[in-house]
Length: 178
Image (cartoon, rainbow, N blue to C red; front, side):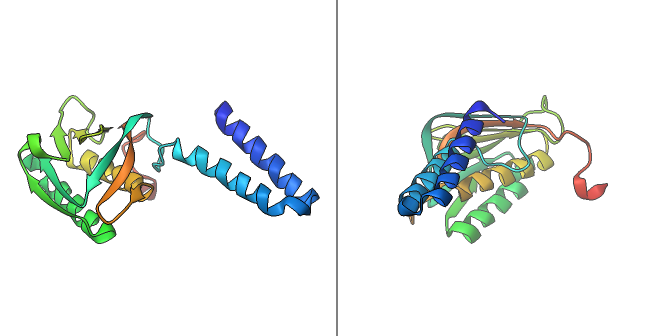
């Protein structure tokens, strides 16, 4: 547990104890507790399972309701899955193409990464998913969709904080395979 998380946990616990003692200010303390809790959530990357490396960067990325996804041919099926998830979950349409210059989200192949490893780099103007395999691309899309679920949504876009994630499976099998 980081010192910041421990501090917020201590403050939240202290405030909850005061709620029990002093019923006169229950509503005010409850609001303060909730605000403190939400302020810690906004500063974290919420991906399960927790990636090996994650870092929040300055700025925000805005995914428009009509976006462009570019992909190498090997990852096109994963890009189509991502496209379907954006439509099903948010009503957002997207076009898949091979022109990386006009894309909002791009899939890039890097054979130097481990087979199921992936990297996500979210910049203010583009998201880049780098991986060596379809499996890695699938895990990256799953992680990215988790982040979008916590983003600020409107009819025209979803806004998420800029961040970097690098992850490699710890074992060559998954929990359900044991």
